[in-house]
Structures are given as structure tokens and as C-alpha cells.
Image (cartoon, rainbow, N blue to C red; front, side, top):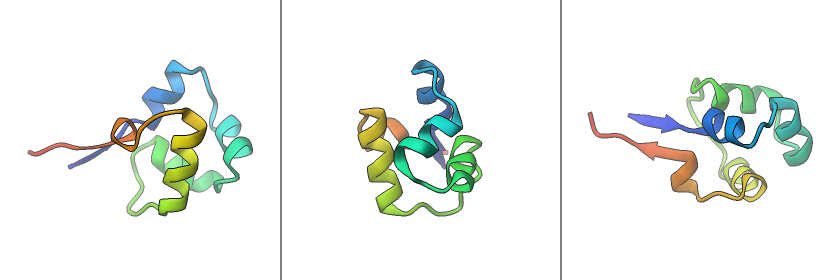
Length: 67
């Protein structure tokens, strides 16, 4: 199972979806799907932009959990 921690990271940094969209130029729908963990696929460029903006490692943003 893949766990996306975008909502947690954004909450810790007190960011809104609109803040992330404006700063990264990633489509709002993409950010919303990641935020709600509904994304089926993610572009590597989007992950790069998110990690740069949020100042985090990919492993902090996305985690694989063995179930």
C-alpha cells in the first residue's frame, strides 16, 4: 500500500492547497488527489516540485507500507 503524507506535511507547515498550487504550478486537481490520497499515478516532475517546495525528501512525502 502506498501512503501519501501531503496532507500531514501541509498541515505542519500551515499550507493550503491553493498555496501549493500557486508555488508549484501543479494542477489543482493533482494536488487535491494527492492531498486526499486518491491519486492513481503521479508525474515525477510533480513529485520533484513538491519535494523542492516543501523542503522534504520523497520518502517523507510517499511511503510504501507492506500489508
